[in-house]
Image (cartoon, rainbow, N blue to C red; front, side, top):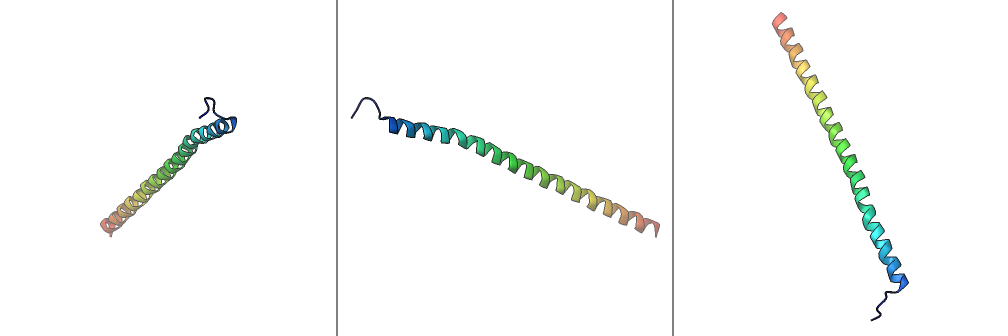
Length: 66
């Protein structure tokens, strides 16, 4: 077994190290996209809840006046 690694294997290990470092950036971007989707879904849920509440209020007022 040689004491010094061959240049080819060290270059391969550097490539592997760079690819491992790049993965968290991609994972962080994916988590941001997922977070934005969750926020949009949450905001849509609040709008639906507001519209349903307004509709119920209008029905109650209509019933009271008639």
